[in-house]
Amino acid sequence: MAGFIMLIISFLFSYITITTTLSPDTITLGQSINEGETVVSAGEVYELGFFSPGKSSGRYLGIWYKKDVEKTVVWVANRNTPISDSSGFLSINAQGSLVLRMNSTNDIVWSSNASTTLLNPVAVLLESGNLVVKDGNDNDPDNFLWQSFDYPCNTFLPGMKIGQNLVTGMKWFLSSWKSIDDPAPGDFTFQVDPHGSPQLFVKMGHEILYRVGSWNGLRWTGTTQLKPNPVYTYEFVSNEKEVFYTFDIRNRSVPSRMVVSPSGDVQRFTWIDRIKSWSSFTAGQLDRCENYDLCGSYAICNISKYPDACKCLKGFTPKSPGEWEILNWTEGCVRRASLNCNHSDGFLKREAVKLPDTSNSWVDNNISFAKCEKLCLNNCSCTAYANSDVREGGTRGCLLWFSDLLDIRELAANGQDLYVRIAASELEQLSEKKRVIIIVTCVVSAMGVLVLGWIIFICKRKLRIQGKL
Image (cartoon, rainbow, N blue to C red):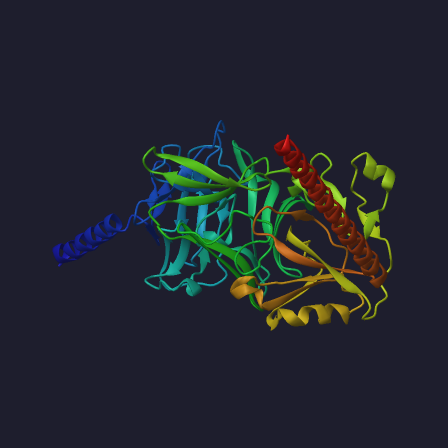
């Protein structure tokens, strides 16, 4: 009988060993990952284990690209609490929480803190780079107990979300490392502001450094390079439950990532397998006009005119002319004539621009754009309007502003039209100026034709005289 029991135990242990061998991407109850051991995703793209960044002696649990000899890290569990020695180990408990401890003291360094329990909790490193805790063979993402994608660090991977769950309040955003030696949260974040028409920002603390803009159905309004292409797909979702931006790659065999650096730069990298290295091909904040609100209210930035990059919109004048002359534009511009708050006000069309900050705006993507002007005129607080969805010729979608217009710039490509509300008297003056310009142009053109005709007549006359001699 004892021999039979030993045979059964031996069989069970051999089964567990075989399962572990066949599932290098999984941590089960009773297993642990120690220093020198790793978990590898099924396609061997990502690897989970312990590392020390740069010159740091601290040990961290993280996920990196397996094929990259530099071990480029995309996620860190204990980014605020490094382990001082090599005694760290990761396990999963019966409640379904991942727990990182120091073997020397058994102190908990980090935990995923599961709020519910599972019958058969397992942790799996997916081929997407997402470390998930789930119940056995339940692969429905909606049922995951916990996932690392809900807690991004400095790296945006395909399939991740940047935004906010409006039901739970959970926010998904990138935060830079403090330095290349310290993965603790740094000064810079890359996040979606869900207020008004949601938009992307790069912030330093609470200060906005760079505004990517609001989503217009194809791209963020401040990005000229983001457009439909054969490499990436982009998606922006905004409903009563969540607001988020995500991207994917059409060819999953070509790793790609977006990173917020310790200095606040946002860069996208693609893996070039031929040279076994990363190539950076896009970056945010390319010129000074991308500095948030550089020109102040009701002004527009044109980098081709730098250093005199800012000018007031038509119908507006510098609030502080003296400061404006010394290229200090922070106070922006003010109206030359007050609005009448009636239907006599009108709109000036400004073409090919990065639309203003939409934090205090209103958006409806389901109404006809033709109704947008009337909606703005009917509200005394409305300062401008634009098309909120440029797909299908821009026939649908309305975006209204109800505060000063901030952070506008001219774009060489993929800009949008902005309709700025001004007083009727300003429209009349501008119309009169246009009329004068047209008259002057016509007079000058007519005089030019007369002069040219007179020159031709004189030349022909001379030729006739010379022919008679």
